[in-house]
Length: 577
View 1 (spheres, one colour):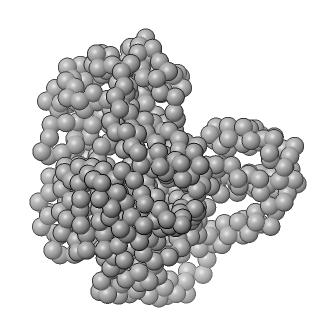
View 2 (cartoon, rainbow, N blue to C red; view 1 turned 135 degrees about the vertical axis):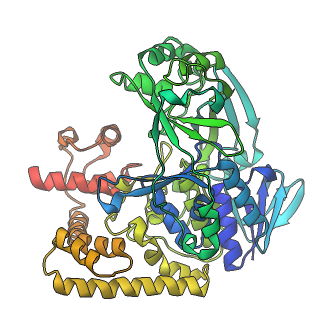
View 3 (cartoon, rainbow, N blue to C red; view 1 turned 120 degrees about the vertical axis):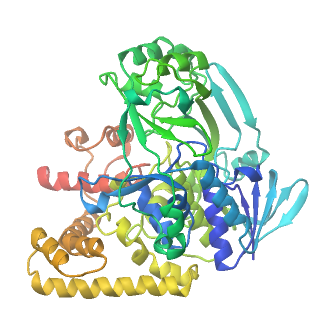
């Protein structure tokens, strides 16, 4: 079976890798062969909700977690003050090393051929893909996977100027096929600062976590210990904007691409540009900026938190108003980019088109944002272009992602642990066990690895029975004491499984009750009364208020998670009915 993948970013890489492992013949087409898996934005992998997906990708035989472990320069587990279920690993990586490792792996993968250039058109006959036109040559194939990222009709904005990067006839064809479903989103990136121009003595410092936590099951193998032992870890520094910074930005808003009216499309809600922060969060006198070194082989610093589309002179002014950056030199200015995406409600739950057999789509072309979301779609679409496999939201964050986006998106989709109603059982510490049945089914892992996961599952189950004999009631202190005294392996996983058991059962009862009450009349209900409902969700509900008669009508609203619906349902039962 021959599968053509268009695009070699994080989605395309994971798709090509998994297809190579499970036996397909792959042609990977990229605009630039030296930019495979290039990290155009922040130099990090993971984060809240994202690390869970990275672990699941890894447990299926994917690459993202493994490459992050090898190229990692700063390691930190987020949410450590909260429960284990929402704790999430984030690894700052050497972005040049990351891309190089990714390239080397995929170039040397069996059954993968890499071509450089642009796909002009897809050949479709009787609503089925037959091939792609590449440099006026027809390449025949069984399936096509589009993972084009932000390259479709992309435009770059800097101040009041704009530049078309790539005019895409492919985008026009897809738009025609899907009945004008093509829309525009925007994203942005901050300026890169010369590290030699930063006064680090004025900045606050954060050290990397010790011992180092890893994403990949492969990272415990002895053959990688030399790499980890001799790696160079970076320190992470941070500073803040101030009143003067905000004043400079406010006084120059008319020069911003976004606020001058040049850009009209939506950007990521949870990664706003500095202009948005200053306007929408006026009460905040300062905003945090993390200064992250991009690579050991580069002097570029990525200042996370100040993406913008102001002219370069205004960028210099506001950056130099920040403590520690008074003499900062900009190597590359920040900018905004606008691109085509296609509403994923046109797709089945395996990321295949509902209308064109054999056409799969993954990544930002589906209206998502983030490396991890792209990689997740890449591995799912890759697997399903070869063999039909269902990813369920009950057992994976990959399932949550797909289930959410195929309802349609009206702003760039980003994963959080709060979007999964099954987060207590779908933790990053048990992804290998949760993905075991799928990895066995598709034969993407070596038998020795499958056996390792099986033994772990068996050991945890056996240990749980032993502990439950002693632990008649849920007692956290006693549970910790038992695990400490006895020489148990996988202590974190055992602790989580026993601790969350009764809470998982309680959550299941809530979900069952919600499903029974889908016909509940809520036409006159005032959603403003629910205090823990976010502004984002409230906006979406109020916008569709006329169409909401019953509880089940809320399921039709884009970007409202099952967790939000359960919160609404619980409030209704407690205070209304």
